[in-house]
Length: 415
Image 1 (cartoon, rainbow, N blue to C red):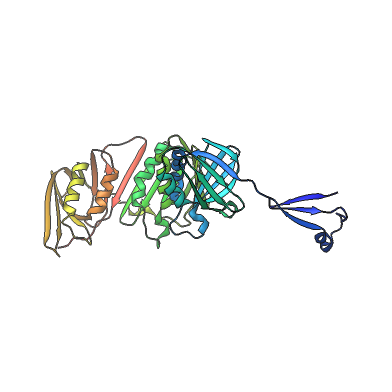
Image 2: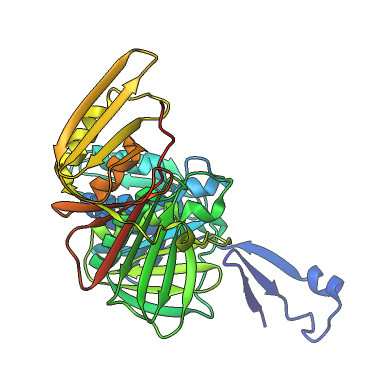
């Protein structure tokens, strides 16, 4: 009798009958074992150029330009049953997409270099592409209507494992609401790696709604949706890169986003596209402490007119501070900027509504323009107190389902 044992899909142990199986003596067993190489089958599938390119571009942002592991420069292709799953990662963030509109001959797993694959697909017209992958050598052949292309991949088993949700809380949210929150907050996230807590968007869940807060110490935005609530309070920080990838993911599809989260990771799923990101392990600053409460001076002005005037005035400001002075009085807003190094200066006046005492205050024109560009109302209210305290900018039109507050820190005026 001959017994066959399969090991890692690579070898078969052939144990001759003259050796008693119950004997545990390794030297005797090894003496009667022959190693026979198992020939792997080829991984084969056919997919449309446009379909594959669209899915790859959706998740390609997860791949870093400076990878820790060489295999992270690749897409992981996994065929299970009749579905092709593609994964991209930088170890901190994983993104995956499902492709169902394909013809599959043989399944398997392989890692394919991302850059050469994307460049090839972009250069080809829309047509069916036939892939053949030798799982022994990882040679990949791509057959098109006009030719064939060969490249070398890597073993899929070397690709990092995707974190699985364990001990999680769950939440469902409309993709439009989540996209709106991301668009309102992402611009204010800090890029200062010395302040890790501020390099992401702080998310708070509770009975009063879901709140997103971002700040870079110069500007702050707080967005709250009152329709999305949870019975238990939760708080976590999503990294900037993950928020950018989430924005692209939400912009391409509608529906309900399934969110799961625990102490270390957040999981997002929308129509077959999945993202897993590692949360920032830090404490977000007490943002409520920097938001001025009593602001007796209220300036109401047309948002678009104000933004255009700022862009014009900023041309003449100092390139180190982009300082623009605001001289506010009832019915009139005067803007001034100067660059003393080149003797450049500019002034403009705008009509406005103003309640309060005359006030002179200076801001970075770029920060103000960024904030105004995120708002979408015709008019904005700018709440001011003193030249040394932050200006609070809110939409002039109230909304029953959401709240939005933006804050810009002032800068010291040049005499």
